[in-house]
Image 1 (cartoon, rainbow, N blue to C red):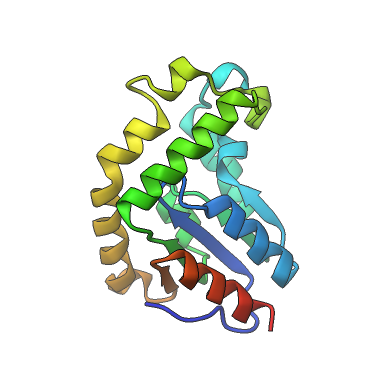
Image 2: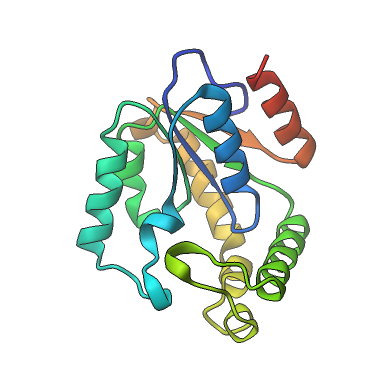
Length: 182
């Protein structure tokens, strides 16, 4: 379940817990392989943290994956069938729990402090960051379940067309990127 992206691969989904570095890694992969990068959160979120209806969201993601070449970051389990029908590689960032939580808290703090404008003009607030619907709380509740799901997906016969690459540490991510650009 580890390895490198084979030559000629042009459809890659980068997954992992919130705060694991999916977007950063996906951007670097896209740049290295000269592919177009798509961020699922950017496709999903509407102004004022509104969510699109599933029909629109699914259609937008389907338009992305029908392209010949892409790097798509994000999990969105309900879209897994759409994303992975054409994906050739899934890069799974599977860092230790405490590292993920630390990175997520740090990222959230910096976004709130700097009033960073995110997707569709949205800005994280301290209240949102620590509410019951926050990404921090969501991640804490779902880390173990996501790990089980991705482990099972990597072995699923129906997904045998996908190469799963599991990166379990920052050093593995760094090595993966170094080998990608060789």
